Image (cartoon, rainbow, N blue to C red; front, side, top):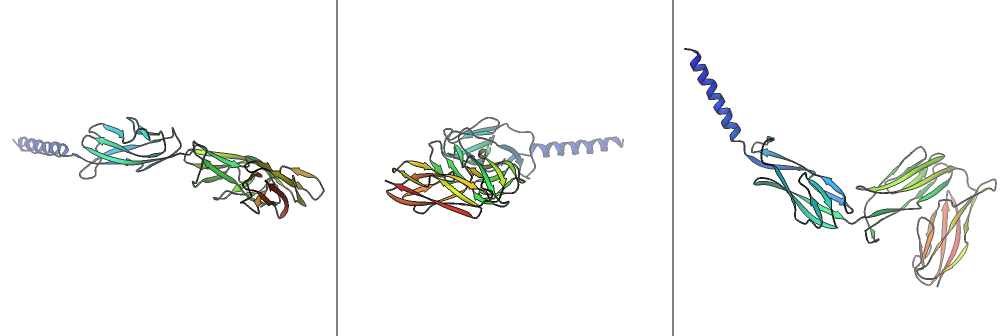
Length: 278
């Protein structure tokens, strides 16, 4: 006879448990990451979504997630939550579990490549010689885009690089300096030759170009024993940018008529060249 009350109690507890589970209704959706930023076309990012009840407990069983994009021409999303960039712009990706949904903002930046200058060079001078590396992010149309970059060196026993792209020699060898943003990256091969420099020479010492044309200046590092190292990496500066500008690879571009002095510096040594633009 005592078994009947026990059975009734068990049945009641079971009924309460069933009622409790049935009362767990979808309430919120959490998506990770909460924002998508893609650099370039055909780049991708996987989103994950999870459904929660009124008490913040996860619901492993429930309606299937459906994904959609407000602007498929900017970014598409598949049934698994993979977002793919299509063109520059902004869009919103929505994930829905029945009547419960969440939105994720998506931004696509037109960045096609990263150019490092010089792309290949040898850094000559005592250990600790520093030179800024020049990096330009270009869009699919070839236009420069101002974006922050993350820098790294493949071998910091050879060369280090700062967060601003300042390269410093450490020891003899070769390393790759890389600038990244998202999945996009550009690289430059840098060889290091730890050697004192007696003076610098530049070729040509005088040059004449037209507006819109360019001229490359080559740096020669002369060692104390008189030996010469050609095509050395150096820092270039134009005294008159309204006449001509010069990039990190030593290529000067004529801007307007006039004359400018091209100053070259490396490891405490300096030399100059003259560029005439007409």
